[in-house]
Length: 158
Image (cartoon, rainbow, N blue to C red; front, side, top):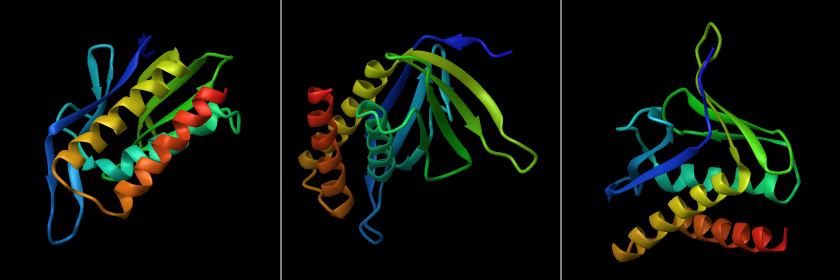
């Protein structure tokens, strides 16, 4: 059986962010810290703007009461986290590696949904601030900014 952590944090390494001029893609290290473990791993690099946009959108559905489950996908690799609302404030999150012969649950966390929401929003905000410092802008960044704004509004209303 897996040890259950009480906190799942989103880690964004703004120093790792790279902009590919040719493709317009923005890569950087983004991963979860669950207790003393990392998922997918501490050096995981992905399309940070798109991934954090997906996560803000997914977690916002819980905040506004549209659903009791969510999936936080990574773009690269067979990794995702799936969450289930346990009550008013708690969510169970399973950190999964998808395999042909079935999924492996690498970690489990039960944490406060508002803590998780704030962690995702803080990472998304940090990313936007870093991209603004670098004068980077594209449709994905504009979408992320809009999702953050909408999440903040719905979070204040609920």
